[in-house]
Amino acid sequence: MESNNNTLLSKGFIVSNPEHATIDANVQLLRVILTPKETKIDFGYQATSYYIKGGWIKISPHTFIRQTGTTEKLVLTNATNIPFGPEKLHFNSSIEWRYFSLYFPPLPPGVHSIDLIESERSSTNVFNFFNIRLDDISRVCNIH
Amino acid sequence: MDAIKLALNRAMGQAYSTSTIQKDIKAMKEDEHLGYMAPIKFSKSQNGYYYADENYTIQSYDLNDKEVEAIEFAAGILQHFRGIKVNDWYNQAIDKLLSSVDIKKSANEVSLSNAIQPEGLFYMRGMEHFDLFINSIKNKIALSFIHYSYSKKTFKAIVIHPYLLKESNKRWYLVGFSEYHNEIRYFGLDRIYDPILIDKPYIENDKTDLKEMFSNKIGLGTIQTEEAVKCENVVLWVSRRMANYIKAMPLHTTQSIKEDGGYGDLVVTLQLFPTVELINMVLSYGSNMAVLQPAWLRKEVALEVQRAFNKYGFQSGRNGKQ
Image (cartoon, one colour):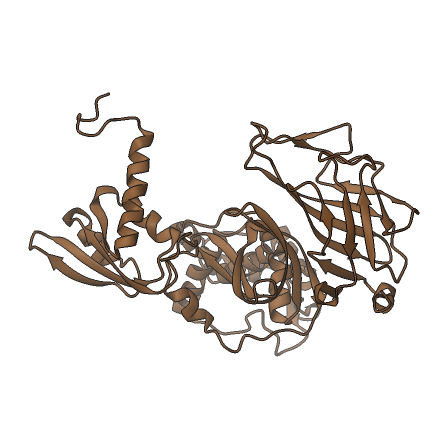
């Protein structure tokens, strides 16, 4: 995404509600914030009524992002509002929710889309997101 | 110093020590929070203090006693909102205002801030962003934030061009043009996460009168039904027991009243958008208030009363005995 190059030199940019593919319906990928320092991805999780008390969430410390179609991994550096596995955050009821963020190293300029992979063994219990589009101009804006 | 002590004693009705006066003089000269930065000097020849700038005064406005009292009243109300993390400068500004009006008050007078007791303001989640929102409104800067909908139980990343911070029923809302919804929307501060200022051409509000938008509502909670989409006449029956209260303090600015039957009961008409808060208000009066019109709202409230009754596990028609 060439048009990103200039903004990466400054404060960075935000992609709101980027298009993507995933399996888990309870977790929503909401926003990608790309800065020269890091890549931050914001999520919302609605506890599930499948479990009486809403179940739990955690994130594997081995979670990574990669440019779609490539193999080079940028591994998770930090997480807020969600514990690293094996520790779990247990909900108290199915009406609870959680806004959380995952942090990765900065992406190089010109990346059109990325995958976020918690585990390459596909399962509904992992947070895997594919083809997260960063090049839809209508969803992109610069940080002030 | 003796002359200052004497003057203070006369004005305030009590004695002050030399060290207290010296500390106050120092604070007037140097305390940045107090903000006077008074150019006070000591004259050895005259053996007294003076302002190096003859035009200097700590009172920017020369107020009379009634005006000071009016400001003290307002400051007293503001004082009840101290402690809310709205703005780093807020508490300090109130303290300064209170200390300013205190200057003219003698020691025997009861502070007006202790003589009035408004309900005050409770902290709600999201108020820590107040400063940022005010900054974005004032400087016309768009914002990106995450919003969680309590009713839909879903999240959205919102880009908003903010116009207003609106308080309603002790809740605060950010009002602005939402790009996602392509219209003016309001978002409860408690449901806003991680707001970030963004660079986008600011979309001005040149179509909607925001005052009017909110003046025909009680609260801002949307009733999830197709009927609650327009401003209409809401007609209420009010019992004679509550009649005087409703006459003395109208439910809404559009309130008009008709006597009902000559026993003191009232028929009250309001013209507004029905909201969740309107329903809650009717329910709060229990058997002393009922919706007469519109029919859909009458049914909505009746069903809620029925659901509430069922929660108590009584069977109707048996005098409340199980």
